[in-house]
Image 1 (cartoon, rainbow over the protein chains, first blue to last red):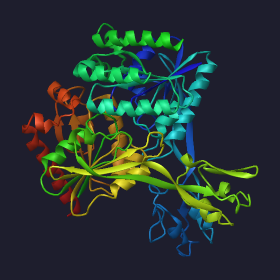
Image 2 (image 1 turned 180 degrees about the horizontal axis):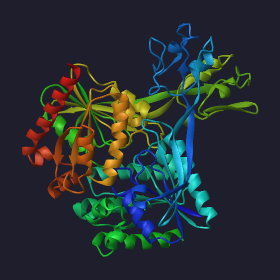
Image 3 (image 1 turned 90 degrees about the vertical axis):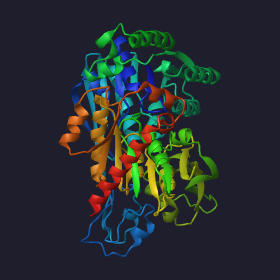
Image 4 (image 1 turned 30 degrees about the vertical axis):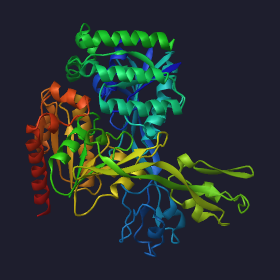
Length: 287
Length: 282
């Protein structure tokens, strides 16, 4: 089974819109939304949830005021200043390291497992989908990403599907790293802007660091064809296969507003035609 | 005053708003780019950098001559960053959160701390605007520790503008926490709205006043506006889609340089924020 992970470096280049479009075209695949921090794929895929699970990960310290003698050892040891002068742990600042819990002489500190969000196994008009929702202001997004990809693969295997299409997060930090580990290949969606190029170069470096074969396509190409071409030159120098160019096309926004993929909205638009070419190139590469 | 600029959804225009507002203001202004994974503000500000610092975080180093293989370090560690295997101790520095627990618990005092590189901080200026950003080392998983270091550069007497990363989880919280106002930049689309609601949720948990900028305001639907009205979220600025602005942005140009009439609008945006913050505190 192969997994294609779509990332970008820069936010807002069109990962989710493109992945939804591929979902329209690809036969025999499962879907995974690994952008757990700001998951949007469901807004187009309209999943029917079949299974809902709690995501419990990490711990959080809580001081029992009745037992606490205010000796202050916890405040000395805490490297995040998460414990106030009144010996209350700020749950937003608490890193979950357990040092205060471990060393408290009165055993006054609880250290329960945290419920950080939920994950779902669903059905969509394009196939099965694994997706998740990280709780607001929560951490551990990397762990949830790893979990949801694993569940996505299980979904694909269960239904004898040989492709998993995974929507990745922006950036280069732990959620992105967690979305890349063990992937067959990654498609980087770039935009032809100074920011887009800068961010794409960093994510190419990340993919190379983790030895994941990378490809690139450039969205909104006609906004700045010179920059677009410069990105393609850079890609080729780094052994990143150039998959194609997509023109700026309002069909992306219009389709999204209606909860449709670009093909469902208008499969003869310039954007749709360009994406079809890219998908055909991808299919060849993935086989 | 510290203003943080966040969004939820990526690519809505945070850096555009942060940089254009920063250069439109006079006086003692700092721009701190806390999107350490993909910092972009410097591409528009083009600061003259006069300080570069490598930032590290402490991770354990074990002196095997002192170690008695008791395993307490592995027991206390919540992050699987150190483990006793056979007759040796293996630290996994990339997993370490630098809590110091293993060092503290070791009965033989066999653990000391060495550094794992998080990235660099660069500081400089352009036309009197102080600029600081963090650049995460590619391969480093954790951005909050570097973001915290960037935030240390905020001066209490200055007006500080923070360009935050996209999303709503720990890197964004680290960028927004303790600031005086959060400006949320959104787009009027289903993705924009969904992620905006998550961002508003995060801002409410932090109990910070906030306001909205709607970018590409004429491309999408009216649901963001309806939501803003329902939540009493003031819309402080709307930027219609303008191909000229998009093309200028693609070249690394600032809106206020290409279309100087925008300077007044960004100044007005700041004054509205100032007034809202004033009213919250009085």
